[in-house]
Length: 343
Image (cartoon, rainbow, N blue to C red; front, side, top):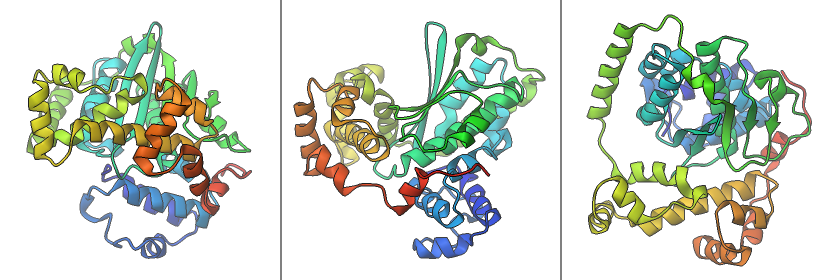
């Protein structure tokens, strides 16, 4: 699922660029009232709509176009908590911890290694389609969040995108004002770690506490889904070779047997979810990037390409190369890689 504000933003952007969003919804077989009443919308539906919208509006950077229009207000109560956090680090940790309340379909991650911090975004779950489009949109939104906290001139040191490099990257350069690295294993903003210590001007403790209380209430009202929480965790760990049931059991302070029982009650197993996470990342990289099968194998920490091919055949019934051939970019995806001029 996705944040309720994303759907209306897509609808509005498509209309502004000259296409009829209602016609596109009908063509995709989607309910014309999909975005009414602040509903959470399936990620797959949003991805299909953006992809078709990019084709019909002749705007291949539609994901960025939508994302750059988002701001802290788009995040609702979470935006208030972020805006009134004590430091930038506190704000981003709040975003990481609570993004699931609005964004059931992707996980935000925050990690620091030495003097570099990486703020990442990764779609997950069985319906996580159109990952490249969602990732561009999300990184544009996260950039605007950081500019709201740090000043309009803020720019990351690097932007990482899990998609092939388009012929013209002027729009990316214009918006991010930083080097954009394509064909990456993740979508992320990279910036100096000392930014996390920067205090946020005008932060109001009373507003922050009120937002925290309201978010806690909203999260308490949401049905707990052990399987979804585990999918989120596995998506962040799949390229780090940490998809081990024992590790998850220790993290949750339960036994391996109890973990298995919880998952069995929800109709799945740890092996099935771990395979799903690896398969999803593999397919995203094969479909959206120019990486070789050997490179994808290495990212997923397989000992050799043959082991990856064997696992991929078990997941999909075909080899990675055959799957890639059968999932070559459509006309719309080719448009995304075509030369264009920024709007």
